[in-house]
Image: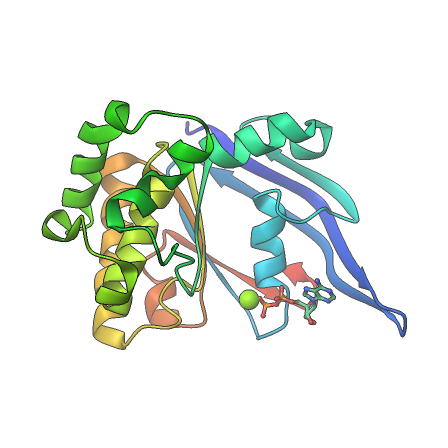
Length: 224
Ligand code: ADP
Ligand code: MG
């Protein structure tokens, strides 16, 4: 029996503007087991990104509960929360979010540097990851010298540098052509299978959703 790695209970999220209250998520329940690869689908504006950011502690719920590895996010102090974000979760975004003036290596090592770690302690890990994402010969390139697919590979390696148990990816192939998108999805599938990393991706495309082991749909604020 696989362990539950994320447990979401009756999660609600409203946004309040001067004009009106928008109820985006109206009671989400979801249990993610270790090693699952979940694809979240749903219409534009349905709250997919909001749900993903809530899971990663980047947004605060209006009500409800989110547990990561049996710990309630809302019960963690700021220090515990940032350590959880840094060590348990890797983020991958649609537009890569790389630092332009850092080369591939230093972009991948950024989460280590932020945490006060030493580059030399991570050189073996870095080499493994460069090999895994197929960028061993581009370790000193800068983001502007890379294709979109290569930039996303860098961001995936960065997400993996702390060996997180969970990867949260928001439309990771939304900005890529279909052939490159397919290669990136194959990389995610390989990471999920060989490293056992749980992956939760948001996607528009049924083709890419099918790389997951389970598809859930957000519609009218709930999951089906
Ligand atoms: P999706 O990723 O499914 O396209 P989002 O989660 O980005 O949807 O957004 C869901 C809804 O919440 C949208 O109506 C959006 O306008 C609204 N929303 C998202 N973020 C904010 C915010 N920071 N303030 C106000 N409204 C927001
Ligand atoms: Mg979105």
